[in-house]
Length: 176
Ligand SMILES: [Zn+2]
Image (cartoon, rainbow, N blue to C red; front, side, top):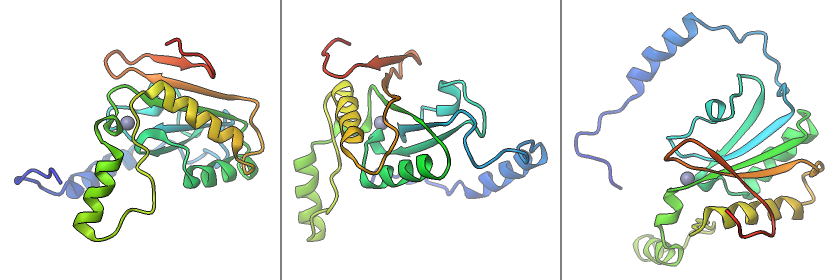
């Protein structure tokens, strides 16, 4: 809870900006099925614009995001829909350096919540130390789930927040 004392809600500004956006709106012809048959799972980090990083246009890919870009049940839910109903065939995972989840100790976090709230979270925070290892874990989870039918084209990357470059992660290798 590091909300600064001078916090001001940003919504009025957002509504203003949306009106500017809608005035130049040009996407009415786009279809619900992503054009590149691609689904991207990425961290929610505010420094990363997935469309920009991957050179994608609107309508070209599903972008599924959460803290860490972790493969959770809810991500599997989204990927299941993405492949079975909306035609995607390729999955790209993007984790990154300097992730917020690298700064948290999972056990401490759980104890803190339990002490403060009287209840332990029933979900895992999915804190991690090494983003490369975390991508490998996530790829393994995709291979393990029965709910994702198309697994022939799964790639994983670590995005470097200091230079904007993606580094491909290979399964079973420790090289970076
Ligand atoms: Zn992150």
